[in-house]
Length: 386
Image 1 (cartoon, one colour):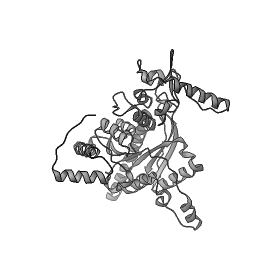
Image 2: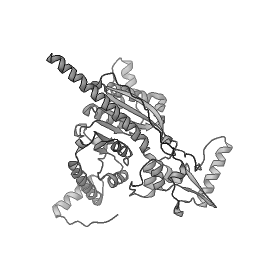
Image 3: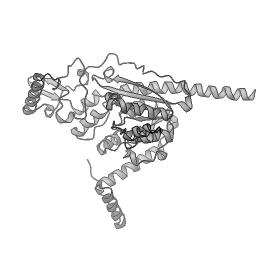
Image 4: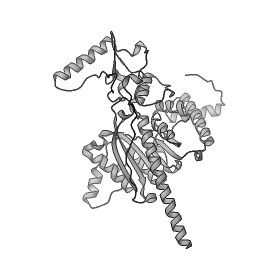
């Protein structure tokens, strides 16, 4: 990181000092964010979304995997939100925009209008006690009652306020069975109550990258706009030939990624212990001509789920750049953070080409739906004239 020394008047310094104290941040971080937001605002004013096919917002944006996918499908991102400061750094380095933080503090009315809402929202437990009580009393419950206190509630309130044509939500496969299926039931009910026709499917990223990575995708279309005639299928087109692990590996890798004798011995003993107990826990050596296990945000700890064998050496973990490729990020994607943060970021991200494929399907469906709506309006106008 580079340094810039700034001179300012005493009054401005005092204001900055008071502000940084109230925000529990250093003055340096406050100035850095202020500059980033200024640049972001300037670039947004210079953008012309009319040159793109559609507009979208990027919620729980992480490092922008969804943004890359939807921009490749012809979209223009008009708003992004991500609370993690390290992810914000990576996002800014690649898109020149600093996402707004803490979605719970953002007024839905302040978010720009958009065609598609995109969100990889975190899965949190929903409290069903209050809902059950109201149901027993014969009282209806809305999404505000069901989802308040979870980050999914923020998705709902933005959908309610802005009424985008469509949305794409992404989450872990286990969302379907979370809390014995009650969490997913509440999500579906809430989206239906908001007037969206929803479609969902669990898709595996291994059709595009050499990684077994199952995620549930939920797509919704506005019934008020398109009525009940919406039909949507996740008819994705896999990459051919499908990539294998050796396709994403560097030919030369720094020795620091090789496991130490201490860590390698620990992982082998840990695996042997669980094998003896009949469990399947343990490290995973990725086959060079096959696919790896799912990379997770904990990869920074020991890399045990995806290790690369080395001749006459202990295995090694993937480099951050190889992790980026494993998720389908282009080699031009900048990684400005430490290895630890990079591992967390890519472990939490999405398979970019899979999301791009779904984005294109959504855009094509919206084109058909919009054309149908426009034709219907023209027919009505013509009948009125006659």
